[in-house]
Image 1 (cartoon, rainbow, N blue to C red):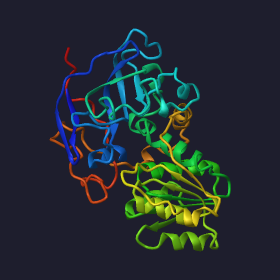
Image 2 (image 1 turned 180 degrees about the vertical axis):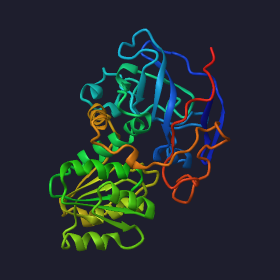
Image 3 (image 1 turned 90 degrees about the horizontal axis):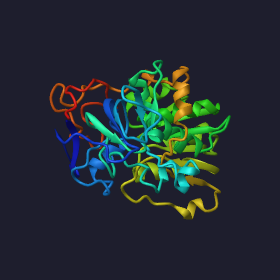
Image 4 (image 1 turned 135 degrees about the vertical axis):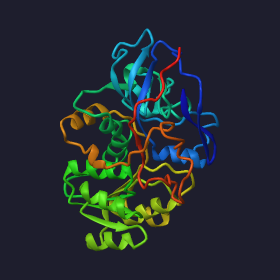
Length: 357
């Protein structure tokens, strides 16, 4: 099969690799039908995640069709269309039993595209399949469902829930990529007083308004002053960081009000300064986190009921790599985004080849 393989910082290749095989009775082999390129994948390519070694197949978000299962798998069977969660859960360790699947110590957690081969391929082996894939209703398209593999659970759990968004709050979302846009959409479920989006790209700020932002600010045009003006100098109740660079994290800590909350979603590859000389007296809560995906079943029900934006996220479509030439994300701009699109691509085309064996 073909797969997108990490070859070291700044280097990827779309190449032939062996088909995955069942290694454990809890595994499933899934034909990949739709994938996304996550911001974390771009951090990996930039060299920010040293645990990912050359030769690793990238990707941790996908929708696909089950083609084979191990003997212990009970919840899915060949032919089922499923959502592949970005997080795998053993279901037995302390953290899984507490619902903190991202911290799994039994061989799960964030493993796909990290410590085992991932979803940017024609087929993928998914461990702990009964707890790590979700059968999809026909009412939810693959294009919409793939947003539930990581984007929506991450924005909702690590951003909105960790930030404790409440009715009437002023919420600032710094970074209006797909995760930031999903944070705007899910923050709106809690009736905040206003949502302010901050980004460098006009197209993303327009998308933020479409998804519920009441005000937008270009990151290079004094967004802190806008927040100060809109809150009578108090600052935001909740600031969600969805970029993952020191400058944006430090900006978030300056925009939050005394007693407010900063929820960091971004994947950071460099140290950021925590200005405790300013923050110690402000009663500020700062949270970090890896998504647990405990909210995925609920979000899937909401998507099926039309309560979450799917196609309205307006992510750019690109052909499956290999379908019409090499299209791996090897060319990035100075902000780490693929040069071919201002947003993260979705690849919904079916595989071009048949699984061997």
